[in-house]
Amino acid sequence: MTKDPHHLLGAYLLGGLDAGDRAVFESHLRQCGSCRDELAGLETLPALLDALPVPDALALTSVPGITEPAVTEAGLATGLAGAVPTASPRPAVGQAPESRLLHELARRRRTARRRWAALAGAAAAACLALGLAVGPLLVRAPQPDATYSVQSGGGLQFSIDLARKTWGTELAVNGSSLPSDGTLSLWVRDRDGGEDRACAWTATPSGRVKVTGATPIQLGKISSVELRDGTQQAVAVITVP
Image (cartoon, rainbow, N blue to C red; front, side, top):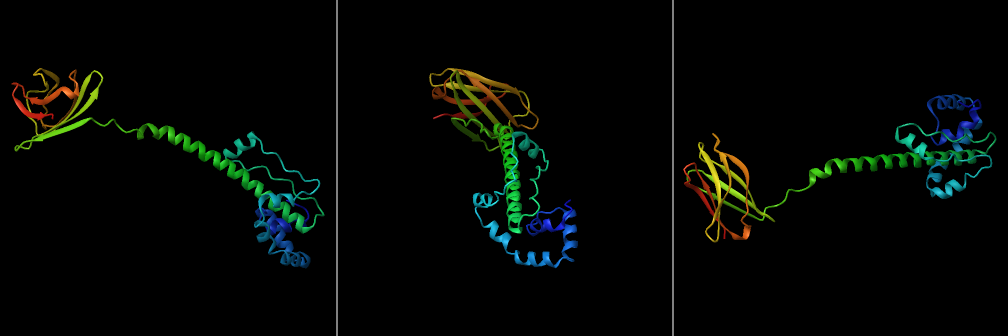
């Protein structure tokens, strides 16, 4: 806290005082007509200064004996951690009110730049972390090369997704209202009359199933896919064009 309240006029006009200094100056202002007159004459100056481009405003603050503290990597790291940046030196005693105002404006803008730099760094780090965490979840599952389905009057629904592989064909089975006992199996027939069992599973009480099978028969050579029950009777047949 300064010992001479007169020197707080510029910072008070720009809103740059902490609570303690503001209370001291407002108490002084009630007793000092000179400061009241000076404040009234400068009340429009903050708006004019804010309208100045930043380089021009900083150029006007080149007062001998006042230096701007350097912003280091350590300082930015401290800012990211939430610490308040170190304040610039107060203007020298005896400066004109205009010089004090310009210096206070420059101090506020330097502080704002440091805070924006810290916030931008934190936001970039957060976006990077979020991208690394969420990115794998956004990868879409491979789409099948062909999908076929069949329904029966008894409510049976049976569909397969066929995916072409270098070693043959992958089959993803999705069914409901299937036989609820015994062993079910999926058979793939090729266009030459040969057949291959792609997968088998124990029937579920609900009649629902999702299972994946595989066959060495290439997708282009598949003529049909059959769902068979435990007695090897066809329950559902899908013809592949």
